[in-house]
Image (cartoon, rainbow, N blue to C red; front, side, top):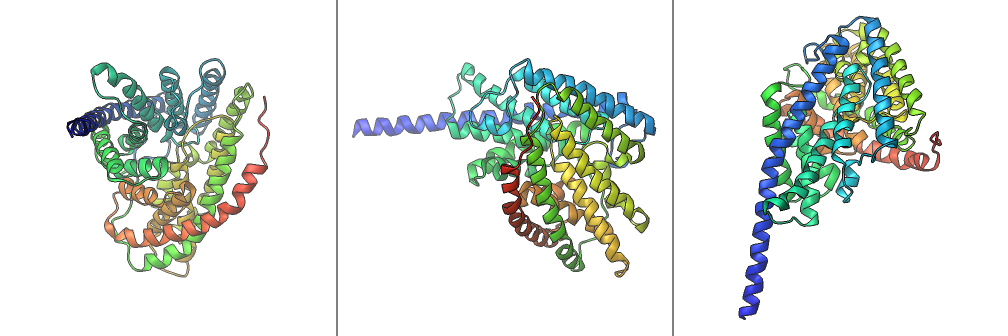
Length: 438
């Protein structure tokens, strides 16, 4: 009896020490990851100022530099980052992605820092790629570093599940610190990375994301990332989303498939030294005429949301298609970065295009609501993460709760359409790949 009691007490004591270690790690990482998000935000502003003499805001999302400066900026940026990524991938220890880090592979600290900063630099010069991957990778690397360091502080070692939880939560917290979106950060951890809903996962990831959000708000405040109207979503929006979602669901699935193909066949060896600058030059040529294509997609998405006139219909069609093409080429030719915000931009453009078309027979249609519904449905389809998509749009747009019904219906339709599409096209991606130049 005494031996059994001693074992029980020992096990209970060990669990308590692990919980204390996890709690301390959650709080400290929330602060550290939040400050890393601040650093990346400041780096982006610095690069934009140097290359484009421009500061991106929700009120001014489109670069205001001259056409020639836009072309030169993104081309020079492409040359610089191509050299950096070539050396990172071929002359040093290669970087490790978040999913591999969750499986136990070590993320090299110096290489990861250079890697995430390079992503931000390219977006800041106008490169067509999302910047949300950088803070997530930085967060995951910081979590791994803390896990290795905590034993020196006398804290209890964590089990494998808690290590994975901290890494995933820190990745989500990196997103939360940049976009001031803690629920999205939590859902990125739980829905996309861990794919497991539990009270422990939610508490740790949400707490860390909340702290990172507070850190990020020190310089960014609590302002919406996209500016939308203040009208409530009426019953009419339910009809609109039923029309929009099948198109964006299909397009989102295709965007996912093509991006996966580009990542799988991404250039990593010496051809990156000319192929990525070529992609950057092509981006610059498009940006010469359409500055909305530059950056992570905020400019295009905000343009779509602000659309009120049918006169911009062809602009949205052209830039929406070009944004998808240039983003895929950028990934294929060697750039690292996210696809969430490009997906939002393409979806917003599609929603606004459909809204403009319907407004010809349906006066008083609220086009910005069509853009928002297009964004959330295409995002959910491209990421295969319906809850993350809904709360991301809700948080970064500061929408009211009237949006939940049309969002839920639209995301459901988009997910059904995209799942059927992916069943067909995933096979094509797996079997028909283009060899990567060596």
